[in-house]
Image 1 (cartoon, rainbow, N blue to C red):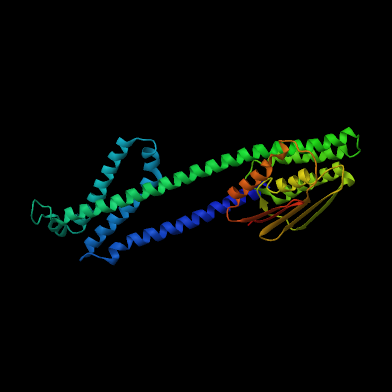
Image 2: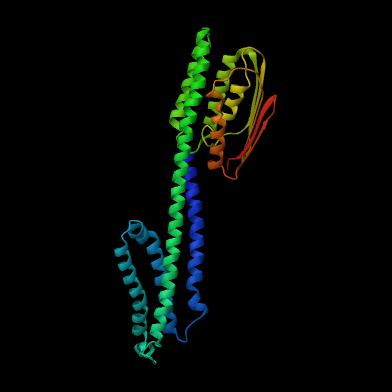
Length: 348
């Protein structure tokens, strides 16, 4: 359901936001604690240092959220450098102005030179300290923003690849199903109309749901049920299909067309209408996991080169890698006489 998908996306975004907010809060508090852990000799100096550190934090976020994307990424380097110089001057001058306002006498003594053209003035030492903090904040914000930018580009690449994979998979399924109905029409079977109704439901699912990243597991199961029913109608008594399902699919989500390639592969390579064949399909759903077991005996029959390419299984493996990294276990046993797929997916 669309509500489930939106709810999942909001949940993921909120979890990420809470995690990032916690990390940022810890970092800010640790940074602002430095003046308190190493205080100056008087309250005006302590407040000046706190103001400097607060301004550095504000600069970090201004640079991270606005300046880098507005100027650096758009190669407006001249404007970017000018703004950085102005900000550095403000970060240096404003705390000094605060010191003069709080204690003019202390501020005047603090800025007086103590030798060598004033280079030993505490003010100059403060400039050097601010420059180090400013540079640290600058390079840290640049590094974090570029890292986020690369992650975003990588995610866009993954999404594009997933769309490409689905574009390959969907016509493949429809082609095989149409072949099934064609076989029924040839022999003028009474089940042709029922098959067309099931196919229309499958096509509606493919067109309206498979563009989403996750769909209702209930709808995915309906699609699988229709596919298996169509195959049973086409094959009749020439194939023994043992299909079982148990578990509650309510309020659970899964990537669309995630399971069907493994099931479809069994019917493609494990069935010969001219001799008895056997296919076992077991599906179960727990609170956190989905389990699929597909077994078929290999039977001799002619392969169309395109059908024998195996891109259905390859695409399914690719989608598992992209959508369930570290959350799935796939085992394939390919022997001379049988082909077995065992898949376990964490669907939480």
